[in-house]
Image (cartoon, rainbow, N blue to C red):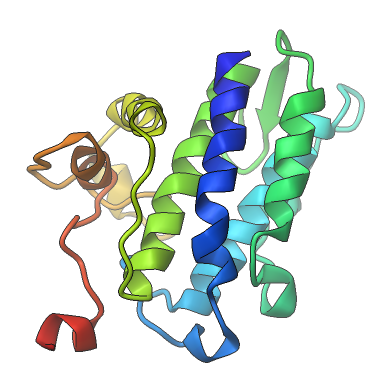
Length: 197
């Protein structure tokens, strides 16, 4: 299935920036309002674990919402959980529906894989931005992320506590910056020290 291959490539594309994070970086600000880098990485690890658990669950044993809980400390540092979710997607029946307890919905596997693909790419951009680095993704990965981002509903729900994305922003001069803006991110965001320097 094409989306599973794209997802595996997306995981490979983000590994270098995730591997570059050190313990000294964990207090850095991120583009995610109110989150430092430690909180963001814990969220990412929880999402990886939750998606892997949801896809691996049988119809008799649905993964509960706790599977998506942030994983703080050393468990949330790095990209080790990406291996689990990539493997889970590769093993999954492409025709099955997956229950995502965190959102209270069941969706076709390709849709779930697309959700995780955009989550992985955008949050890894958040990490890179926090570190003052730039990342570039292949055009087909960006196109897949943009297609998902264009389908995410905007509105007041995005201002609620715990909303997965902030309200959409105007602009975006290319497919990647448009993806970021649709998901509530300023493509020009930079750490305070980098912005002043």
